[in-house]
Image (cartoon, rainbow, N blue to C red):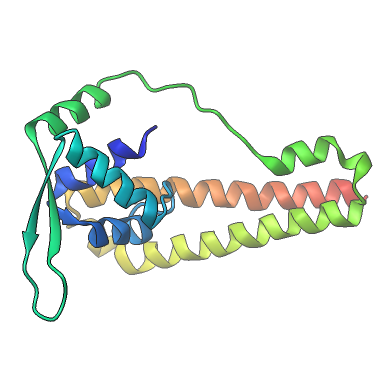
Length: 179
């Protein structure tokens, strides 16, 4: 999937600055889609050039003008077209699984350490998801979620399940390799 459609999706929800889009990546969608600040600004320039976005300058005191991007009819039509396309097959890549296949060239302790690092990373990620869930999706809060927040909640729940699965796999892999 192209970053173009992620940005069009975000701006379709509300006109945004590049800064606000980057914050959305950090706080709202970063657990299922990553883009660097540079990638976001490059894509914004392309989308503006292809007339899928417009840009208005909003004056600020003591700072340069903000650029506020809005989706155009052409951009919305492109997003709708993309949304109606069949989902592509998922391509899964995992460097650690490839390394497991070459484990005869790697000391078992090194391989186990890499698996532990993976589990630790997933444990941190799980902690972040659970923190978001506790602070943003209590039973009372879930009763009043907007449609967008419901969809973000569903995405976050998938992140929780995937992190838990990775942690479980890592524990089982370590037990198998160390027995």
